[in-house]
Length: 373
Ligand SMILES: [Fe+2]
Ligand SMILES: [Fe+2]
Image (cartoon, rainbow, N blue to C red; front, side, top):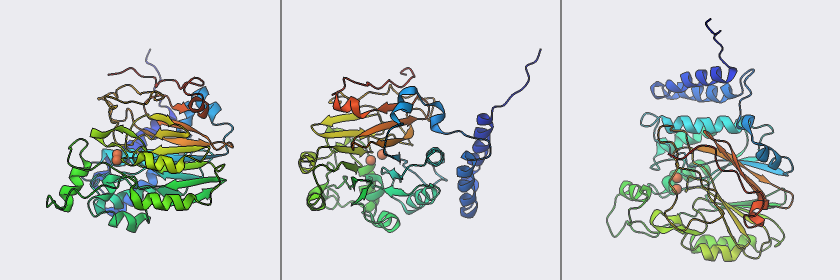
């Protein structure tokens, strides 16, 4: 007997969204605006309650219970113009869907840098346009891919200065530009695009290591002067504020100097982009968490991996969404955070503060649930 044909509401939702996305490269600017708004609305459409937490593991659900506020993040979308690469556009739209469907909504969304691939105006404009569909307030951080074509001119015209801080519910939030490079281009007579493409390369050996730099370190010192050492700090940087692997610029050259400024504070969390993977580290009082990318996962560095990192196995090369996603930072009353990786093709992974404070002994995160390829 033939089985009755049944399509779940989730499948219908994906089919509708797929149809919208398929039309992306052929739309004029005006129609694209309508489509991106419709894609965001589709996630919240009548009867569709899909959001990342519909498949929460118990561990993540428990971690979500007692926090005092919640931040969501999206990072490293690496947008090309949508007529060149449509997939990365769809993936950013998907992350926006995820975050808009969170209930309750996060206090704000941190965008972790590398919104554009080559810092070009159409790329940054497209990213800004898509991020307008986010319901919660969006705070921006800059990445090297956004910056080195025009040295941040267009990024700043869209999003303001890349270095800033603010108070949020008793926590000092600091956003840094950690991708400052020494001038390697003038002496070589490079064009702006040659400079950008060099910085965009992972292991070319020509560009200089990233740093926060003298000017921002002086700013940071001053900004924190009047902040009590009991105040929890939440620092966002694009590169990890420690030295992981220099050949790939998974590295901040003046990391120790920045860490020294943060040392007198009892509770410090640094959340960073750039590394496109599950990445966890602790150095003294500072807890470090890497964010996922919406574009592609980087492999793990061949040496020097921090022991607290629960590694995700190699992403499935046949599934372009594997190893990607977005996530949340749950800030607790004690000022420490749980980090949630919302992986699109695997169970979510929560790295809890007790795992960090116990040096990896308590609440060990479960590994993502797929085999390696
Ligand atoms: Fe990136
Ligand atoms: Fe980056």
